Image 1 (cartoon, rainbow, N blue to C red):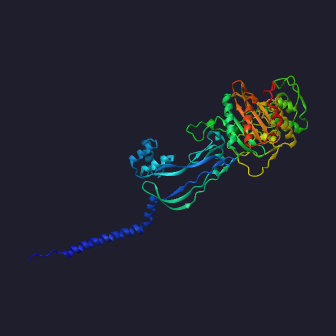
Image 2 (tube, rainbow, N blue to C red):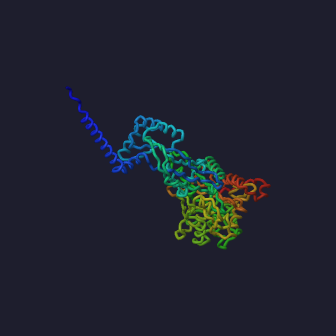
Image 3 (cartoon, rainbow, N blue to C red):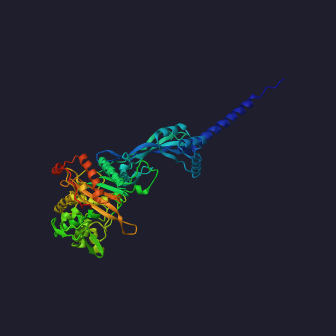
Length: 571
């Protein structure tokens, strides 16, 4: 008789095994869900649920008419998570696509992994088409991050005023730096789910909304800025000059309408960084202004009550000795009044007038006009120039400062001072921001003296004056030429190197614009301010007057036509 198999024990064994397995699964589930659930969820979220920044674009910089001078455009940047096991072949393809060295990129990833980093930039701010091709590679751990790149529509035309930003869209120079806090936006934040490729597959929730930067409306007029840049560049090239600068201001508000320098740079292309090209010379570089200082010396004389526009000074024989130094004119002008002192630009007369006044009195006048101190325009790196205290002056110092030697100014500083003459003796604060309310200035000269000085300066821009090349048919122009020998590194003056300057006001009867042009070290035989800088004033202001629709104020001159310049007026 055959014995039957014992299925009962087998069933018990199988059921026991199932029971143990089920108990193990329940225990494991309890451990994962209850005992370690919070930790594991945190770890999972750390890998797939991320908090990412929501970029906020930088505010635009606009000209006074709302035209964009600087704008930020969204672009993508490529990054990689070094802690993820990226496909080696994929990283190689990525490097090749981005024009990078695959071996160098791999080394960077290894070093970042060893340092415990979870984020490494691969290449920033790539164009949209390239970003699309990067995304199509689907390399694990590689992602795209939205950022913003700054663009400057005017290129090199407005580069020195605007400055530039770095790759993080933060201001580094110019108005971009001065108003960085104003322009910078505040990034937002959101939670997202990312896949194994580091790509966002779902937005979970928004933690904080991004706040864009505020727009900055400047006082710059894009049209006049272009005129100033073009004319200055042409003059620097034509005269083979080392450099040049121009500042155009509204004397009634202190607004800086245009500012340009040569040489310049393109802020959109900064692969070759040359520091000297990035310097805003109109604000940072101080120079001896030559005879453009004479109006301020004569303003002190008129204010003293000892002189009037008709007071005569004997300049014969065209030179005189002072403390072993020779002060001379281009010609023997004989006896001339104060108006003619400006018209023919007599150094002899200006120095004699200055020496007849107390040093403190002359120094105070220069200080009141802003020399030896910054204009407080807010532009980074602004130079105060040089004006030594009157207690250190020798007679020769007081004499030479009267015609622009021994004192140093910037083009912005000089333009600001001429604004006070144009604005009836009131100096409005210099500003790069478009005024939105009436401007309160500081009186530095009685109105009747300022009016007298402006009338006297009109004689300079006549056929008998040194600045006739700045005359504009149909408009009255008040201005002053200046020519100064350049200092050498040895501290003496070069006989064949000059700084040519012209400062002007137009229309002289109802001032609307002031401009200062400086051409540094012109060559080719012409170096006087009246020859080199004055024509730039005429070209720029002629265009600006038309653009601003400022009506002519000198119809008689317009009808009479041009008159040949008198010989000898070349200062």
